[in-house]
Amino acid sequence: MFNDTAKNTVFLPLLVRNNMSNPKKWYQSWFNTPYYHILYNNRDQSEAENFIKNLVSYFDISPDKRVLDLACGKGRHSIFLSSLGYDVLGVDLSNQNIAEAEKYSNPNLKFRVHDMRDPLPS
Image (cartoon, rainbow, N blue to C red; front, top):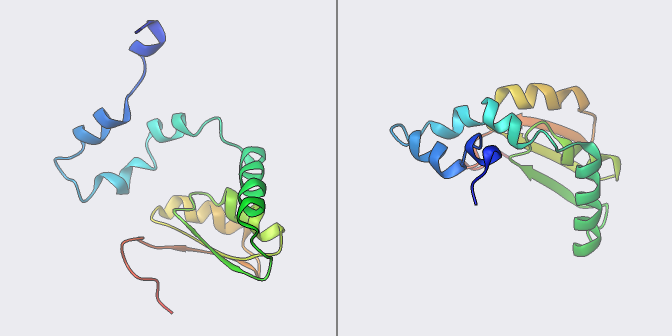
């Protein structure tokens, strides 16, 4: 089952378990690690657009709805939702991700650093 490729693979449960000595903080650093970027390396805007098209179609979401993109990362899904006419708020814990996402802000697309465990302010 294991081959040369598997020897170089980092398994997420091991990574998380190794960071559990400080369980309140692992998620604050994980999204800026090389492992995270390797995991999401193959994700691009085209993949995000295809996913959102399928989601919007499946749930029949009308464009007059407001959308919260929780844990939005750099905003790939939020950006496309906004281009479809939705009023979108993307939130993420990572300052770096939100700084990147904010480059695409517009009147119908906002981004905010926010911890999903806390209520959103009105």
